[in-house]
Amino acid sequence: MRGRQVFMDSLVAHGVERIFGNPGTTESPLLDSLQSYPQIEYVVALHEGIAAGAASFYAQASGKTGVVNLHVAPGLGNAIGMMYGALKANSPMVVTAGQQDTRMRLRGPVLGYDLVAMAEPVTKWSVQVETADEMANVMQRAFKIANEAPAGPVFVSLPINVMEQETEIPAAASTGVFDNPRPDPAGVAAMAKKIMAARNPTIVVSDDVARAGAQLELIALAEAMGAGVWFEGIRHHAAFPNRHPNAKAILPMDAGAISNTLGDADLVLLIGGPFFEEVWFTPGSPFPDGAAVLQIEETSARMAHNHPVDAGLVGHLPNSLGALAEALANGSDDYQVAAKGRNDALASQSAEARAAYQSRTQRAWDRDPMSMPRAMAELAAGVPEGVVVVEEAITAGLDLAQAFDFANPGDYLSGRGGGIGQGLAGAIGAKVAQPDRPMLVVSGDGSAMYSIQALWSAAHHELDIVFVILVNREYRILKHNLDIYRQRFDALSNQDYPQMNLDTPALDFVTMAKGMGMPGSVISDPAELAAAVKTAFASPGPHLIAVNIEGKR
Image 1 (cartoon, rainbow, N blue to C red):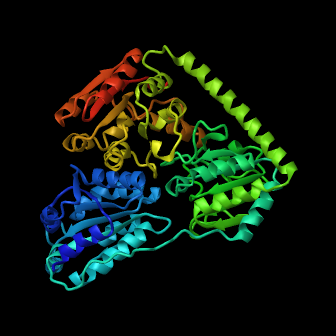
Image 2 (image 1 turned 90 degrees about the vertical axis):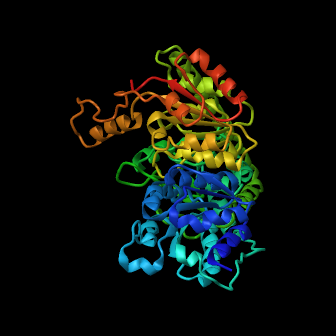
């Protein structure tokens, strides 16, 4: 058998159903093999970054390993940004690229370069298959490393001549591996003791809870603690129901502001993530003075990595959270009364915050151009039941989180790492992963232009996705950040916003969509938006709606 057969057999052995890619010459062995493997679908993208972004969201939405096929050095370079996002998101992915014939290595062939070195900074493991005899072992190891916690992308370079070499070593995959370690009972007891001694405990949660399927255990733990649940500033999933009375908001992006937001918490429980991702430097700790810090992780690699902890617990998150909630449920009567009192207070705070938001929304209801709160409310009114929201709205994200009810982890997907353009690309993978659920993509206009070719992939594969582009003709988030920069560094603040407007010429998203085979419409009147969304979902195939909204005020 040839190396390419072992490669394809390895994909089958590991349960791969789809390859996301952009074809090229050095990928000929893979592409020519596809017809012999009808069980594997090739999802075509017009740009390698879109293929990588789609595979990352596919992995997040399906819980399976995303597989990407890129084209030599320029193609890998095109995908590096999305691979960085996948690394930050902990998306299990096997990224491959065709490599030139190794017999030409010293001749400097066209498109040739050190692909392993290019991919190494944004992957967990980067390797080139040097002989066909290595193929089975490399692929088995690639899937293992991609999926072991914390998950992430690996890269495999596939020289065209190695794919055509003969080998007698067949593909193989591990089976029957049970990797759900239970937490140390002593650690659970120590952590429960500290929580029961706290007056005002709080929780900060990351995406691992959603990926591990531990949301119900987190709800039980939050209620047993009488604790609010805060989210990271950038998140991929809704790890906790946003309408639950204990749900708080996303945390800010610098240590000082995080500490101020957590307020008078005397115990902070960190669950499942590399805390914290910051944008701006402030001195000091992100935790309130004197607060105990606890951490629960699925891998010791993350434990106390950035901050010392007063108690740490490593174990499968459903097991760990469930065991801790059970220990607290067996606490004293005095503890149960205190926890209930905190839950009641959180419910009152939640109701007050919801009422205050509704009041602000009403004040902005009739603004012209359309306000972001109104736009999000109309979108929520127009979507069908069971919708999945893929969000890259950035400055509209807070209003989107208020307008929609994200009760389950699969209801919401966004991008990690801070790089823009993930929304449109990611929607391709998310829809392929969840074909039976309606899907709404909400993206800013600046973000959309980073991966606008994704519209072609949606049309080509006839994916039922409604793309909503929020058109404010500016990089609004950059204007906000420039204001913060000027304030923090005492820079001149009476100047305009340089190179941050997208109005000359204006972007015509409907025409772009039409050119890629997708119908579209423009909405400026908020009274028409919900109906337009309903019409788009009622029509087969993808649809684009450009929504004209207000800019920075």
